[in-house]
Figure 1 (cartoon, rainbow, N blue to C red):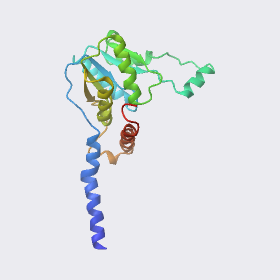
Figure 2 (figure 1 turned 90 degrees about the horizontal axis):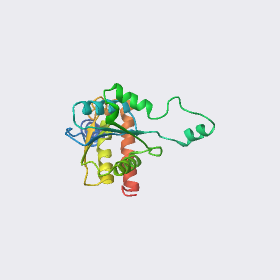
Figure 3 (figure 1 turned 30 degrees about the horizontal axis):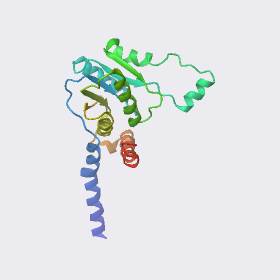
Figure 4 (figure 1 turned 180 degrees about the vertical axis):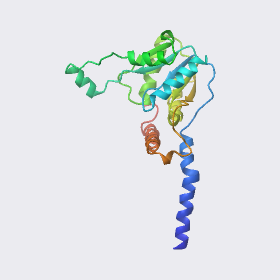
Length: 210
């Protein structure tokens, strides 16, 4: 009985001081920002405002001349409402351009891309890559701004989708509250971590090249 208790206690301590922090750290790939051709802000997932604040900060510091955002998601429920006559008070992208204007990003430096069917990071990367290709040569370097817990997976997807000709530098939103060392103490962060590992499982199941 005593041996069982000791084994359980040892496993609990290992999980608390090694496994759980390691799970949090593995999700994070936060690189030092450098000069780039563009800042791309991911819009799928949660905690968008910290991402917008970070992108505006990087632009203000002169890291890149333009900020690329996306949105205008059109779920089946929204399409059904529109078929019944619903119209939003302000058409996209007025709200998002207003946000970045408030944060100090001038309108000429902001590119807003409508991606109605991008409901995950893979489809978002596909849509934005296609939009960039339509402009001409792809950027040589992109600062990819997203939530801290999303940086590793987002960078992996983008490197696969956009190709080796573009360097992807993931940058975590500094205002993001995710703490990889203590995430299990906060219910919201537990949900983020579980969802993010679910995203990794989805990538493994589907394969990046599906």
